[in-house]
Length: 73
Image 1: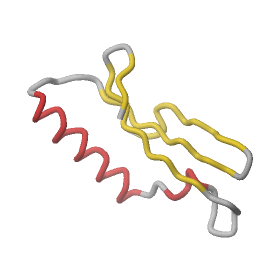
Image 2 (image 1 turned 180 degrees about the horizontal axis):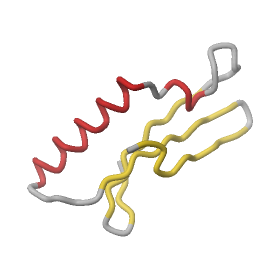
Image 3 (image 1 turned 90 degrees about the vertical axis):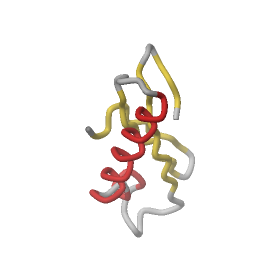
Image 4 (image 1 turned 60 degrees about the horizontal axis):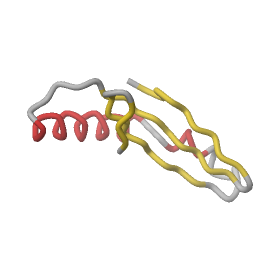
Protein backbone atom coordinates (compact mmCIF):
# COMPACT_ATOMS: atom_id res chain seq x y z
CA UNK A 1 0.00 0.00 0.00
CA UNK A 2 1.12 3.53 -0.65
CA UNK A 3 -0.30 6.98 -0.04
CA UNK A 4 -0.33 9.66 -2.70
CA UNK A 5 -1.97 13.07 -2.36
CA UNK A 6 -4.19 11.89 0.49
CA UNK A 7 -5.35 8.75 -1.33
CA UNK A 8 -4.48 5.27 -0.11
CA UNK A 9 -3.31 3.12 -3.01
CA UNK A 10 -3.67 -0.63 -2.65
CA UNK A 11 -1.40 -2.29 -5.18
CA UNK A 12 -1.59 -5.84 -6.50
CA UNK A 13 1.70 -6.91 -8.06
CA UNK A 14 1.50 -9.75 -10.58
CA UNK A 15 4.43 -11.25 -12.48
CA UNK A 16 4.63 -13.66 -15.40
CA UNK A 17 7.56 -15.14 -17.27
CA UNK A 18 5.30 -16.13 -20.18
CA UNK A 19 1.75 -15.49 -21.33
CA UNK A 20 0.76 -19.18 -21.37
CA UNK A 21 -1.57 -18.58 -18.40
CA UNK A 22 -2.63 -15.12 -19.54
CA UNK A 23 -1.34 -11.64 -18.88
CA UNK A 24 -0.37 -10.66 -15.33
CA UNK A 25 -3.15 -8.10 -14.94
CA UNK A 26 -5.74 -10.72 -15.97
CA UNK A 27 -4.92 -12.67 -12.79
CA UNK A 28 -6.71 -10.01 -10.73
CA UNK A 29 -10.09 -11.69 -10.81
CA UNK A 30 -13.42 -10.85 -9.20
CA UNK A 31 -12.50 -12.57 -5.92
CA UNK A 32 -9.19 -10.69 -5.58
CA UNK A 33 -10.96 -7.40 -6.25
CA UNK A 34 -13.54 -8.22 -3.57
CA UNK A 35 -10.77 -9.12 -1.13
CA UNK A 36 -8.93 -5.86 -1.80
CA UNK A 37 -12.10 -3.84 -1.20
CA UNK A 38 -12.57 -5.61 2.13
CA UNK A 39 -8.93 -4.99 3.09
CA UNK A 40 -9.31 -1.28 2.28
CA UNK A 41 -12.49 -1.05 4.34
CA UNK A 42 -10.83 -2.83 7.27
CA UNK A 43 -7.78 -0.57 7.06
CA UNK A 44 -9.89 2.59 7.07
CA UNK A 45 -11.88 1.25 10.04
CA UNK A 46 -8.66 0.70 11.99
CA UNK A 47 -7.45 4.20 11.15
CA UNK A 48 -10.91 5.56 12.00
CA UNK A 49 -10.70 7.66 8.87
CA UNK A 50 -12.70 7.84 5.71
CA UNK A 51 -10.10 8.48 3.06
CA UNK A 52 -10.15 7.98 -0.69
CA UNK A 53 -8.81 4.60 -1.79
CA UNK A 54 -7.54 3.49 -5.16
CA UNK A 55 -6.72 0.02 -6.44
CA UNK A 56 -3.75 -0.31 -8.77
CA UNK A 57 -2.17 -3.27 -10.55
CA UNK A 58 1.53 -3.56 -11.34
CA UNK A 59 2.03 -6.14 -14.10
CA UNK A 60 5.60 -7.38 -14.46
CA UNK A 61 6.55 -9.01 -17.74
CA UNK A 62 9.81 -10.48 -18.84
CA UNK A 63 11.77 -7.30 -19.47
CA UNK A 64 8.99 -4.85 -18.68
CA UNK A 65 6.44 -3.37 -16.33
CA UNK A 66 2.98 -1.93 -16.85
CA UNK A 67 1.29 0.03 -14.08
CA UNK A 68 -2.49 0.40 -14.11
CA UNK A 69 -3.55 3.24 -11.85
CA UNK A 70 -7.16 2.94 -10.75
CA UNK A 71 -7.40 -0.53 -12.29
CA UNK A 72 -10.70 -1.28 -10.56
CA UNK A 73 -13.19 0.21 -8.15
